[in-house]
Amino acid sequence: PDRLNVIVEGSKVIGDMITESNLRIDGVVEGNVTVAAKIVIGRTGQIKGNLTCGDADIEGNVDGLIKVEGLLSLRSTALIVGEITTSKLQVEEGANFSGNCKMSNAGSKVTPRPAAQPEENVVY
Image (tube, rainbow, N blue to C red; front, top):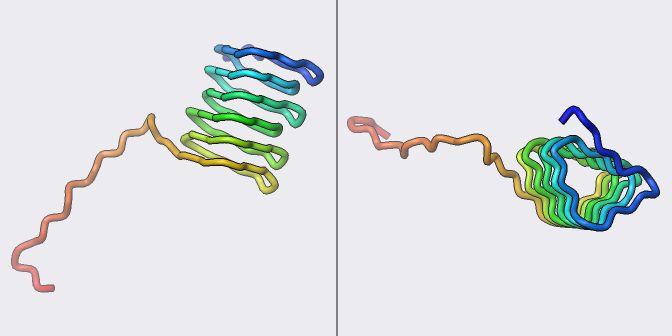
């Protein structure tokens, strides 16, 4: 993940993208994007398709389903249309989001508490 793939402004990719390392998009991607590490979508960046990644920092536009295992940061210039599933969400004032958001802590296990038992010899 120490390497960086960049789609620069003025570039357009049509088709699905899969990468193990970090990705920055300042151009347009029409297709699904899968990033094992972190993705940064700059102000001029657009994804028209589904996004699956470890972490995401979005300043641009995404139209599709977004699934982030870690932290999703929506910057003030972000425009999101679709559904979000993430474990952590950070939203700056001015960010636009239209759709549903599901918070999921799939990595952390919660142990359910046993139901409380009424105590004997207690006056209520």
